[in-house]
Amino acid sequence: MFITLEGPEGSGKTSHLQPLAEWLRAEGYAVFTTREPGGTSIGEQIRAVLHNLQNTEMHPRTETLLYQAARAQFVEQVVKPRLAGGEIVISDRYADSTLAYQGYGHQQDLTQVRALIHYATGGLTPDLTILLDVDVEVGLQRSARRRAQGGEWNRLDALDLAFHRRVRAGYLEMARREPQRWKIVDAGQEWGVVQEGLRLIIAKRLGL
Image 1 (cartoon, one colour):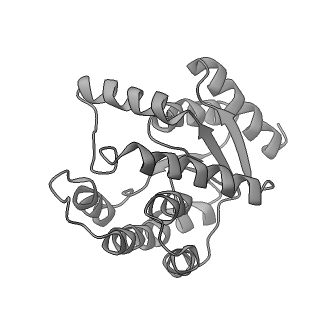
Image 2 (cartoon, rainbow, N blue to C red; image 1 turned 180 degrees about the vertical axis):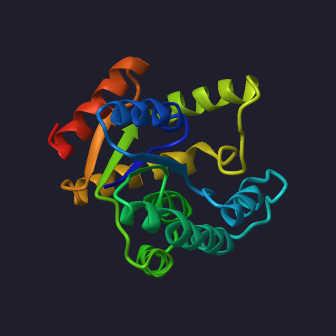
């Protein structure tokens, strides 16, 4: 099974990833965790370019294409082999992030963006996508605290509030359009409550 965690900045995806994997391993599943962009040596190099705060002149089309380059390598080198080996793959972000950020956020043509994603992924779609939904202002405050504690603060984090509002609206629209794949968890709740909500969704999908 291919599970992806999606959400706006500060929604807590990264903090929930490993605890979910540990819980599933305790249930007897082979689980592999990864992230996007990245997950491979090539992908991590592309991630460094994409997230570099100095690259303010990057055009949205350039940004979109770089994400697809990293994603193509990620799918072929990591996701497909792990799934073929019978593992559950859980990824912190995947293709829906491109639709949310580069499509809705940068207001690029969604049909063109979807075509690029399909080419990069070979049509590989997650079995389950969980949206950790959080109010934009709350999420950005969390990101700012993370930055103050030495955490990552990247070029996309630094974009204006209107951009991040479009991203969140895009996520909610995608979840509305495809309810069989998407499930939503209120990530504004306490961490433990959110983790329990994630586990309930995954357990139901796995038949636990």
